[in-house]
Image (cartoon, rainbow, N blue to C red; front, side):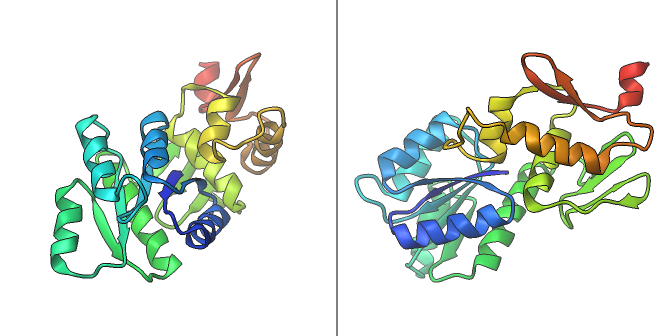
Length: 228
């Protein structure tokens, strides 16, 4: 999951960014309204965490601009204001949720996950490709009934693959969604993590669900279908 944090308090933005990164999310940070709007219109985020009071362009204006541009990315608005009318203004501007400062990281994380589930309400809550199953609610992964333990980043990579099963994904696309836009494109970290993931989810016969596409990237699919 890729999240944009638009927050002008550097300490808070960095703290939240580190906490969400530790959970396996890819996090971008903007500290001004114009920069936040620019990133939100440029990249495909799963959730935007948007502070109400921002320099140059406030959260309400950003949210309205996104909706007017046809962007339906879920927005979680943050504010130190706890008045009912402030919450109403935020929701009327197009925000999907409203969280008052100070807040617990656990609650912020839970609300982000809830917004993502709401966005994907039309899809099956359990991701299934061949014998592999992933439950986004519990982060449980198993293949043919065998539980698989993954690190936060491995889980994020697998979830991204499974949500786009059958599509050829470039290394850049994978890196920008599972890591962030500051990713070093000269590094081989995507290939390294793909190898780690293959070691954990591949079948005993050696058939791999993550198949390399020469000169492009990877495609995730049931190897039995590929051979059919």
